[in-house]
Image (cartoon, rainbow, N blue to C red; front, side, top):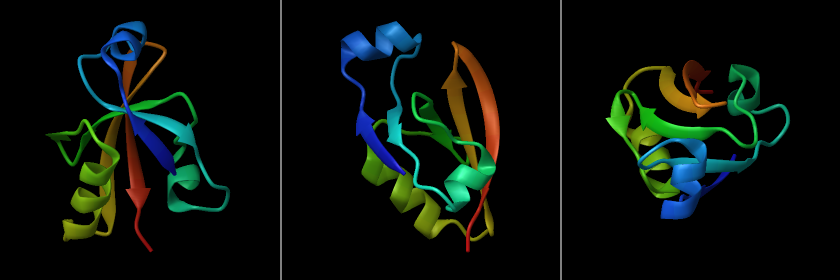
Length: 86
C-alpha cells in the first residue's frame, strides 16, 4: 500500500497524534486481504508506534512472524488488522 506521513493538521482531523495515512491499497495484496483501506491511519505495527511509511516496511521486514499486526484508526476508532506476509 502507499502511505504518507501525517501533518499535524491531518493528525488532528483523524483524531490521532501520529501515524501513517493510507493513500491507496493495491488489489490482491496481503494489505487488501487484511481489510486495510484508503483513509485508514496506521498508528502501530506489532505494537510499535509508527509515524513514517519506511518504519512500517522496516517493522514488517524484521518481523519473525508470518502475520504482522497493524493497529489502524478508522472513523476515530482503533481497529486491529492482521496482515499475512507471503
